[in-house]
Image 1 (tube, rainbow, N blue to C red):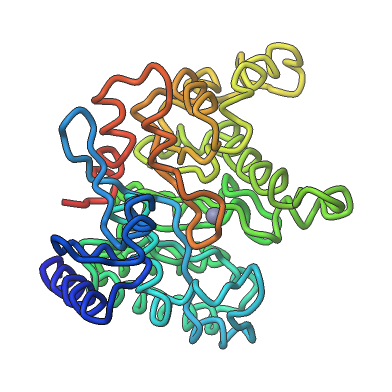
Image 2 (cartoon, protein in one colour):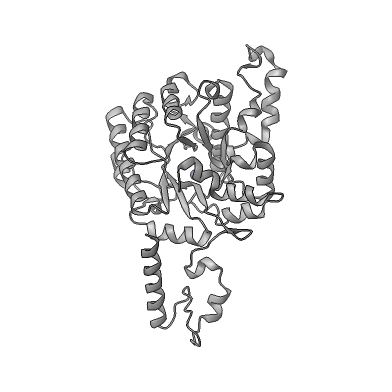
Length: 379
Ligand SMILES: [Zn+2]
């Protein structure tokens, strides 16, 4: 695959040079008089169509983006939805927009994306949900097979039917080679810690795969829609991390992580507000023991913040100081690159890690991709 891509790129480059030089192609021909020479020389590496190779202290880092979205038009059609507008962006389609996606990955120094699809099928009845999931997981497997060096994927599951979701996850992992599941932060108003979802968590633990929790619009953003209006994109900026914060808090405080200690979770958007408020989580029950019967923190086995160091998080906080703080709260071993591609939140997710103060080279290597590769079974 790699050889084929390089060959094609070389071909394009040669062609472009033959045509007299295009602005974004570096025609590396000695003595070539190109009107764009100074422009290309001044352009960042990615703008020339070259794949950015991330290096830490002389060592090539294989970078993995665990937070990358896509969608499948055929599945959306079953739900009477289609790819249009700013949310269901047309470039979520891996069949038509894969070249642009690969170019963006090359430019940003992302070697592998772990693809996920935001749930919008939790209200579908069982047969329809089954069809939507089958279509999506087959397409995800297809795109990963077509680009095995660049994409892995999280399975979609019909979590409103936990038994079916468990079945779908097992099939996705064993039949399609998908690497885990992507789920929302709640399911039709029900918390992920609800005992009805135990069959799903049991299957996750049994398979030893990872679950990516990403907020979907019908959770906290919709429930607080009257408050999150106005300037600032607050339904996302506040609503999305809040949804994740609530989801993780219930999984901790309702004992789900005690019951299924082998469950591995990656939380989107750096786990929302939770890592920044871990001290508050630890002090709630001791302050009001009457609402936490059973022990110092209710009936859970550990101090709430102790659970945070067993979860994984993307580093979508945009400031190096934010990543430094995350490292202090949860440990460098728990942090992964996230971009939210193709949504244009960031083009510098790799640089964010490289610029975070106080990190050892081994921490950077782990955060850039080492840990994600281990969690997702990437060679
Ligand atoms: Zn996202």
